[in-house]
Length: 287
Image (cartoon, rainbow, N blue to C red; front, top):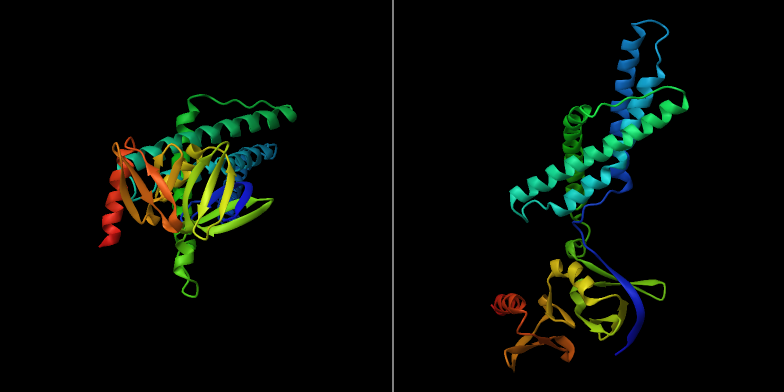
């Protein structure tokens, strides 16, 4: 068996919301179109009051609003990643988006006001924002938040639809990225049998016999891999629940977890929930 040098890892899985160039450009173009429409409308109304109307003001107010919205997009993306429809209670999903919309509006307004005060100050003018205007801005921001959420959801759903000329398994399969000596080793997550603590490192046991060392703690990796079916069976072991081949008693309430390649992971009696899930998984696989 070979032992790789220390590295870092990342799990890439289809289905994770992100903001790529296409979606960002589409949202930016939509915001720009709305802002231009508002600028022309405000400029037209201002000219009705005489030729001395300050046309730069609507341009600044709309531009700062649009830029601030783009700067707050990360909040929408983060909410969509955590509020997974069909995977959590709908009340929790609503709460996440409600809270995210408040954060979205707060950042939008704060950034917008700071930019306007700065620009107005540069030209020798004064910009005043009333705290009571926050509610007015929030009403508009909720609509903007919902529109962006809908756009990203539709775009994400379309982008993740497997193409007929590509292997669906590869489209859905999670990938384990391990950086070793400056290079990224990509292996399917299903080929990772287990991770175990090794001093100041974590050792990754692969199906083909390789053992790669990662920097960090087992707990930090457990947080990222548990959603993918990995189980913490011992303070020093994290096993891939889909790859277990047997469970054996070891005395004193502890057990052994058998893995391909002759690997044997301890299962502490303190990890009762992990034992229940692994037993259920074994029964399901053996049917």
